[in-house]
Image (cartoon, rainbow, N blue to C red; front, side, top):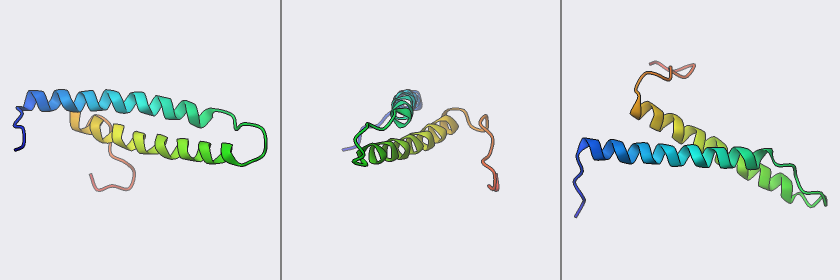
Length: 82
């Protein structure tokens, strides 16, 4: 059976998820900036590409959670109907 939570608890959970997403975003931003290891195997390129992909994903998650917590404060993205 699903757990029933009130709006305050739901907001706390969203804020906790938002903090976690911010932490992960900073981690993956740092990894994306790390220089590729020397050796020419291409593994550094793959790692940087993976880190950049994860960074972009967490940026999207942070934007969504920010909009849930503070609607309208972050401005509409260009090209949207909002």
